[in-house]
Length: 401
Image (cartoon, rainbow, N blue to C red; front, side, top):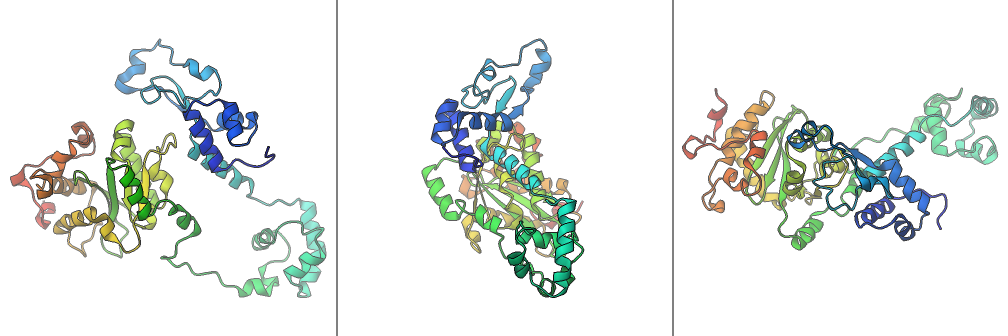
């Protein structure tokens, strides 16, 4: 039995899978080599609460109805594994591995912040080390000869020095002053971004979709205006229907992309959203590297989409959306400013583009083809509507009103 070690994400994923398969706590604990109480505490600490369904004013029309569930009164006290979970109108508690792991990382990070020294320890370090540092002694030399007071890591020591915890500072260490801060290369991927690409490459995409050929694939990209302006468009393109959504972004950042996905999850019912956004293929733009906010349900943390990334400089791997961007350039040629373009303008040329008949769709428009993937009321919520063939406009005169 492993003692006094933290649960990993793999452990938490095994717990979620075990709960979904209706395994007992004892079975799950044995599979991940943990004690029964550790698994039970983990579930209780990180289970997510969901309000009863408000569909069709269900709670208002049934004020006296008991919305509690008997399943939650016995172990494991969560709704994972329940066959009625997706359409349940009662109070729900669900365990999600990804959200539990994010919560664990946040607690772990907060616990490591601050200064882990008492005033007495700071005073002792100041008294003993200050005269030695003035003699030019190096940090390595101090650590070798004074392990009794320097019983913390060297990175912590550097942080304390830079934060003026002691009487001596960076200027008292010539080597610290000598080192220059590394310049950030905007094209250089961080370690976190490189880790995100593991299992999400274009090769993984081909392998995944070949095994699941009927999935809805959404290509995602951005369209830039002037290089001197932050404004841009976020575009989402469904391969099956050639339908495209266009959203105005105030900046090309992960926060703005997250904002759009929050809007989409608000307007589109959960089950419809899961069906429409099964697979998302995008490029390596920095604005798309907050994977959890693209893949997950923003309320529960449940993973409901699968994100993959194209290879660098291989825009042909998502050629559908690249081709559709040409229609945007008919209206807003390259070099145009997006600063004064509103979301209403985006809706206008989005609807004209989606009403353009395509040979690849047997003469139908993307709007008409999209009706085979979702109900019309969802499109109306997203400000999408059909424009008659003779009324379609695809040049710069569209925005001259």
